[in-house]
Amino acid sequence: MIEHAQDEQRVVVTDLNMPFGSMVVFLIKLALASIPALLIVWFVMMVLLMLFMTMFGGIFGSHDLLRPGSPF
Image (cartoon, rainbow, N blue to C red; front, side, top):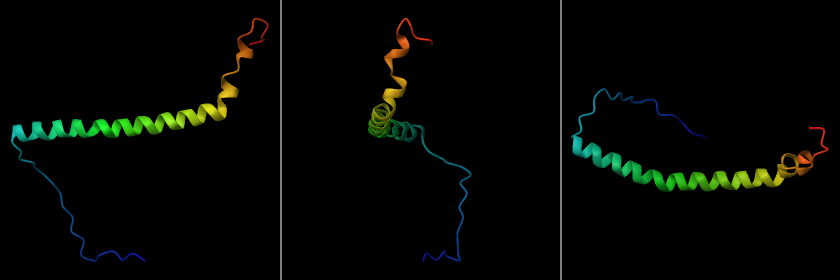
């Protein structure tokens, strides 16, 4: 069982004093770090999309609806 500390300390940041050059370096690092994260998210989404297409592809991908005599 997890016990919560009785003496919680809350912090509120009201100002951030950072030189412009350091902020630029920080934002460049942030952008470069987002590339592998984006690739991982893209890979997971593609796997989920392939699973979805495998399970429901027969329902949505029926070519019988495209025949000239089709009622749709």
